[in-house]
Image 1 (cartoon, helix red, strand yellow):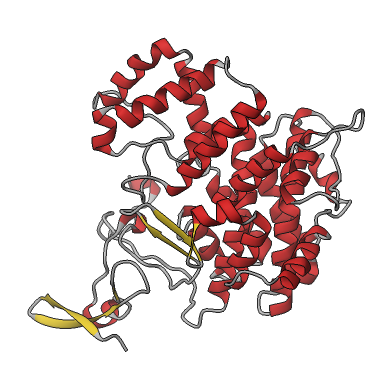
Image 2: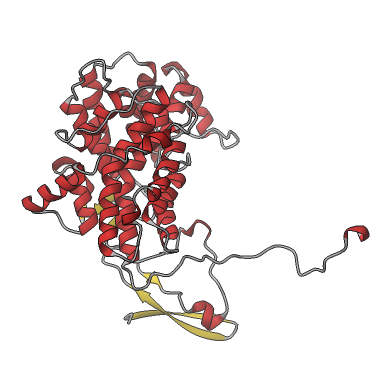
Length: 429
């Protein structure tokens, strides 16, 4: 029972609405009984003022620029932890003991191979298919290969599906990349860690030996960690909505991948790098800055600001450090795109317009720079985001399945269409 409540006066009638208090963040007005009592809906396009669920997984304070996984600040996890440990934390709520960590790492490592018949499934796509199109299809098709982990009412099957998805997404993403460039698939190697294994599957070829640079592996691991979960964003909400119908976990994650594909969501880092290439050279930056400030010009600077974070994106601070490390390691100084990025970053941090509008470089700005420096084409940026976010989607899906308040998602609408009218026969029109 809520300790606080609000009163709504509507058509001379008064309704009492409970106020729920979270561990962190603003209070929440409980309107679940409003329609039944008052025969009215609320109107909230984009659900920006609506809490769709209770969750213990991730917390964001946009005003303070904070992001926590299970209460742990993202800066600490990025600096001291690793992605596999973060996966355990998100799935089970606590950091693992050494024994738990070893067991979890072994379970993930030994599920990285995909069913051999899935190789044939890849070959059904056109050779120039976008890796995201391939991933949506292949992940959705996993339910056709792994029948023993599709019963959402079986706790053990949910656990098996979770491990399989976390383990196999890097393999599937790497296969999508290899297929798109006409190279043979590379099998996972159990002696490599999660990030190094992914880089090896993407960049090694049978003709010559490839050694993963530990610094690049660490930067890749950090990218995975920073993107692991981000509260009730569009793709996470999609996974929960799909899951609310009882759909199998592979279908739910495929739905999340499809939503993530949009340029306003997971495709933002690709859009950012394409914008940097459009600018081309440092001397053209003032022209594009002027366009961004012109309200009549549709041009938008991608990779700056964030819908939730009002002061800065805490992930961007960590990502900037990684970007500097990777560029120094690879000795990349003369790349025109990266020169534009560095100059644009400097302007954004000093220009009054950017400061006033809080248009700071966000995580997409830096992640795109790192991934291009590593050798990934822009078409692979969103697939990498998808494999990073898979554990967050799974954690949210598992939490939803176990929530006694869970019911199938069914948003209502503000209907503004035609009034009732009678059908007119074709000959009489």
